[in-house]
Image 1: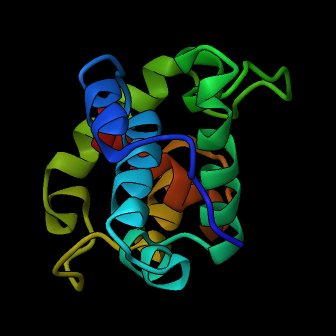
Image 2: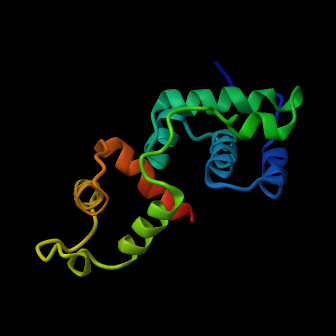
Image 3: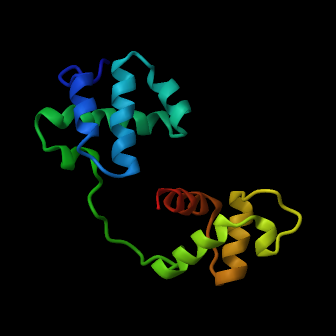
Length: 144
């Protein structure tokens, strides 16, 4: 099934100037690439997300002719469990990750990996996260 028939690549490029944030930008870039003929499976590989995620993002972008940009590219706030690491602790983590693993006492490691960051968080802050969640934390740290 064809996607984004009522949304042009030029429109998507104009919207790029209006959005802020990694995810909103990524959604628009995916739409632009899709309009250029890149298959959904290739987009999923390029951006490290599932094909289902690409499909959902394109379905959201189709709503641009009916809904405001903000409602389409941004996620609604979702209440949930409070984070295990406060904003201050996340800032501390970001500072630690700017240094090499050796500076944090991991002499046997050359670079930060999700497994090593998971261990750092457990040892430094007494908090246990799944590796999947550690990857999410790392992407948040990259956005800052």
